[in-house]
Image (cartoon, rainbow, N blue to C red; front, side):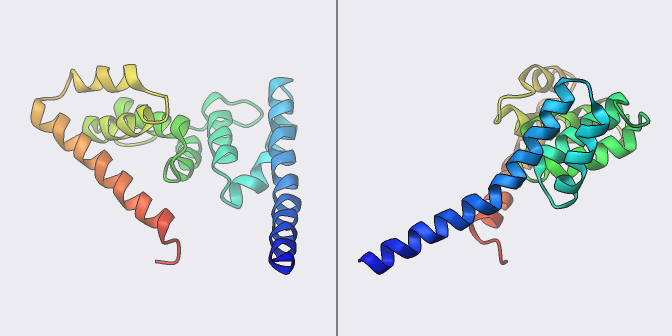
Length: 165
């Protein structure tokens, strides 16, 4: 029992020691962003985003969308939002929905917009956006968008459960 408990504590310490620098870098970037020191935020977030951190990817997308510390570039913004959205980042899912809704950074596609807004709604974003786009769709298209969101959720739940597949 003691040996088992020692291993668990050791593993927990390893996980904390590995994840703490990543969290610190993200929070350092967030602090810089809040101070409007966008260059420092980018310096902190870009390596994390490149390594797959969805929060950093979403924030890089936002910086490119707004032109904060980088040239405004909707295509680069959508690239980062898409990476984060595919991992379940609600804010980025809402932004991808906006891209499909407006046709800025993605081809205009109201069904895909509704799908992404449905996904973001599950994470606390985009309810008004979803309702707005669904008013422009016929009932069959609304159902298709909702089915696409359900399928996306099922696929990603399976991937999370079986990351090696």
